[in-house]
Length: 82
Image (cartoon, rainbow, N blue to C red; front, side, top):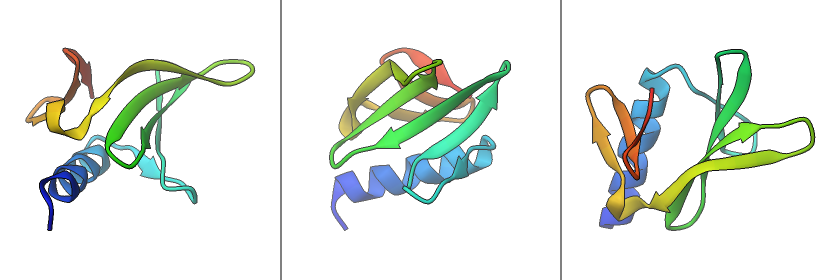
């Protein structure tokens, strides 16, 4: 298993603990403060997005190697997803 695969598995595990639900496309979704949010996994990166009236808006994104899984949640460029 490569470091990228391990990090992805760690992030997915934490997302499940935080209440995110995996959809049929492999994205993890959760409603936060009345708005739909998702973690969108790409080959080497992760995007944290919020649903707008028309599309998804990226709040934070980074490569797996720079993302930290901490007890409080997932840290993407100093933005805490919980």
